[in-house]
Every structure is written in structure tokens, then in C-alpha cells.
Image (cartoon, rainbow, N blue to C red; front, top):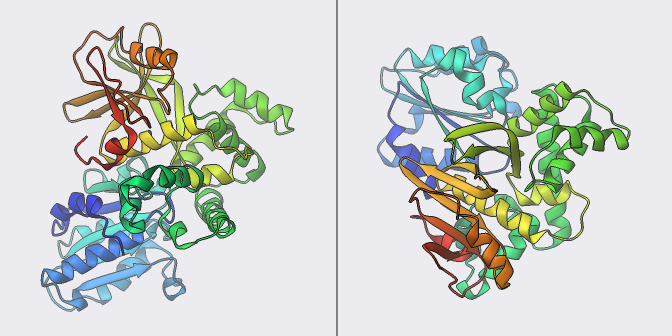
Length: 400
């Protein structure tokens, strides 16, 4: 089993902080439960006894009788036999009504170190802010990174390109790598999506017009590297017999983000130094889910390439924006602490006209933050202070 060291390294400092709830959130089947198990093993290895670890997976029928905060609080406290710290792991806890109240009740006793996972917007700071404000730390768990896939597949450097093409098509949900044929991969990914749709969209978020929801998702994914236009989406739906109101559209978009299917990326005005709430873009959390929800049989390499770079920047811990300049845009502004990078994503730079367009995109930026163009090309095209980076060097470098 792959040890997801990147996430474990971020969470370790909080293992024994009883005052803070540890939240792992993200797309279903992205590996949250596996990381919980790895945390449990590390806590055990530090000397914590088995009977001081309480693990509940709310996907299991064994815990179907725990349906609300009061029942959850009672069950956990019934397992306490002494005054030592108990480590509580609640997997997919959003299935319990008002679970925040139970968690807060446990937290104030100071006898529990609590870890929870969830797969929808109930686990985001916006929804938890009332009951647990300032009392938790949150970690977004994504599907496997390229480097992690290299590790689990034992792919050699000379085969990186083939692996990249495979990821463009089938994404990086961990379990999909256990299937060898494409039909099985597709069946598995469709099952994941159906699970998200039923449990996180219909049950938790109250979306009932599944046809319109799916068509909105399809439109967003097929146009993901373009500026989002509500008018265009509404026109597209109307032409296909699914006329909806503007506020319904935005509700469905929030549901897409809330179930971690897609990610909204805002624009940042580089000259005006301000985040713009309009003309944003959306990127798929997993390219395999994108494949099964779009009509095209051919891979759009430019879109997949840009999407992959976005996901990798997020994994590396950057806050990511689309950069607006006075004459155009930069694909990504990546910000982490005081580290800011400007990045252009271009699948193939072998054409001189393409190179000029990508490198000249930085011309109207007057600051001195580093500038990069990332492509699949091995030849170094760096010039005029802009560094060209090969995609595999970027994906394999934890320190980028």
C-alpha cells in the first residue's frame, strides 16, 4: 500500500492536539480512509494502545443505528474507561445529523483527539464555521499525484509519457490502478461518480434535477479552460430542453464544487492587485471522472495538460488563480506564503509561433516574480528570464 507521505507529513504535528479537530475532506475514493488507517498505524507505533483508538466507518451497516449527534456522543463516551487520551476516527461522518454538535461536545472534554473525513461541502469551513469555528484544521485530500502513480506502478522514467497519456484518459483515483482493462476502469469510475451523485449530491445537497445537473457538469468539463459564462450555459441547457433559472444554475455549480467534482478558480488582476469574482474557470478534480461525463471520444491534450498542472499546484500547497493582465491572461498565478510564481501551461512548444505566444504572455507584468512555461518538450526553450520546465521535472519535483 502506498504511504501518502505528503499528506501524513502535513497532519503529523496535529496527531496529539486534542483542542483541534482534524478534518480530511475530498472527492469520494480519493484515499481519505486509507490515510486515516495510516494515521492510526503511526499513532499505534508511538505507544498508544488499541483500546484507546476508536474507529467508526459510517459507510458500514455496523454503525447504521448512529444517526444523530446525541447517539454519536453517547456511543463514543460509552467506550471510555480511563482519563487517558482516546483517538477518535470518524469516516464519512456527514451521514450523522448535526455531527458537529457531538464533535464539539467531545472536544471540550479534552480527552479526545478527533479525526473526521467527509466527501461533500458539509466538511468545508463554510458549513462548519458556526459550530466549530477556529477549532479545526482541514486537509484537502486529492486523487493520486503523478509522482504517487509512478511509485505504485513502478513506472520507469522512459515510460513517463505513456503514463501521462493513461492519466489524461483515466485519471488518478487510487483503486482504478487495480484494473488492467479499459472496460473495468470505466465501470469503476462510473460507479464512483454514481456514488457521488447519490450520496453527496442528491442525499446531502438536495439536488433533484439530475438531468440538468449532469448537463451542466458536461458543459463545464468540455469548456473548462475557457472563461465561464452563465449565459452560455443557460442557452446550452435551453437548446437541449432543460431550461432553468439563473439562481438554480449557480446552486448546481455550488453542488459540483461542494462534492469536490470540480474546482472553481478565480481570476486575479495582476495590475490592480485584486481577486475578480467573475469570469472564473473550472477544473476537474479527476480526469477519469471528466472522461465519463463528456461526449468526446478524443482526449483534448491541451485541456488535460492544463488541468493536470492545476491539480499538481494545489497538491503542492499553492493557492491558484488565473492571472489577468492589461492585454490578456496568465494561465496560473501560484501563491504559497510569500512565494509567487507565474505559470503558462502549453502541451507542445515545438512550433515557434506557439513559443512566442506563450513566452510573450508575461510581457505586461512589471514585477520580478519568477515566470515559467511548462510543456512536454525536452528541449530547453528558456529565454528572456522566463524558464521553460519539462512537465515531468515539474511533476516529480516536490520543491517546485
